[in-house]
Length: 320
Image 1 (spheres, rainbow, N blue to C red):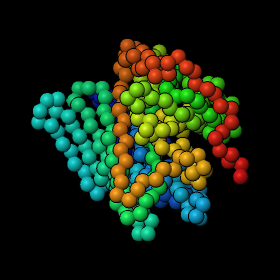
Image 2: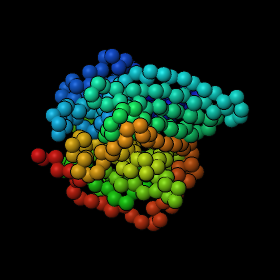
Image 3: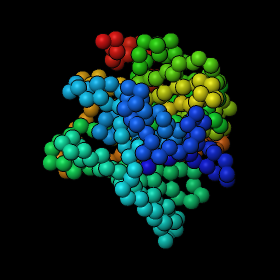
Image 4: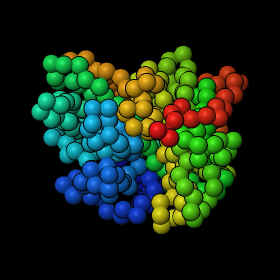
């Protein structure tokens, strides 16, 4: 139930060029291959849901179980898909899917995903509901891995986010921390950089992240609720075009660390038996300089002239 790309008038406006050039049937994705990196064999979407039973980098959990990269939900076929078009104006189109993560003795999570769009508008919304159908409480994690390449991403492109602080994912990112907002052009041998942000919200609980091109006349914004998705990851992968020139703006319950590192951070929440959790996001395509300026102003208004604090040390020590 991910989103491959967003197109308008025959042209891609949101998405990226992955070396994975085709949609890969989940039957051909072995999540545990390459020591848990098999998820990458099908990674080419604009929006990938990472979760919900777990997410983050692969590794062995405290109980000895191998947790593969970014969970199972993206490569689990939906058991129900339906499309509804409202008879009444503005004729909202809603695509609903139900995806189950059910394993005997392990989990019984069900997610109803919804994508809604009004014809002719430059926004679309995601409204997901996670339900724990088990008789026992369970952990859950989610990252809305939202990925953007050309035409927005280019040398001099910039990201803005309403956040109180930012820290490097590991020691490598320390060298790029001061320039976290700006992007390189396609750069051979560039190793990915990941940054952890603590988003802040307005009075309604909404936070905003914005990515725009060098000239600030096209871009995309993402609105999300911090009580649902309390952290934000920015993934900068400005490698060559053929290797995958892309950035990820990723609201979530968790950062990209393996689950065992996130429990001490309080970033592996619990969903009670029978409980539901909701996740609501709004994506807006920014088509001109006025759109971009307004979105950046919204970020600034949430920030209230405060600056993001740069934390020099990673949240997690991955050396042991």
